Amino acid sequence: MDIGPNINNVDPKTLPESYHESSLERYSTILNMVLEGCPLGEMLHALVLLIEAQKIGTKASILLLSEDGKRLLSGAAPNLPDAYNKAINGVEIGY
Image (cartoon, rainbow, N blue to C red; front, top):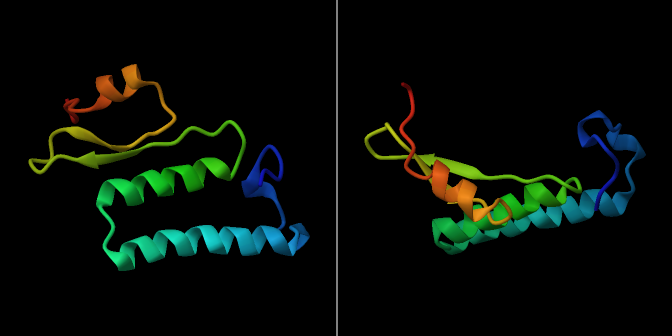
């Protein structure tokens, strides 16, 4: 549900009750996925979609840090261009 151009400046008291319920349901879905032991990729994908649903036009991604702490790895970015995802995956950081 899109409630306007900037969700961060909205007074929560003015939101319809259904917005709060649907938001809680969406976050509950993520928590259930954690409890059920779903694969990390599925959980990250669902989380990105939940974030993007907060406001029309939002594109989100989750980046992970490689085990050696030197590279970014794509965790989830379902609605970003493949070219971007390929370019960012494995990029060295800190230099």
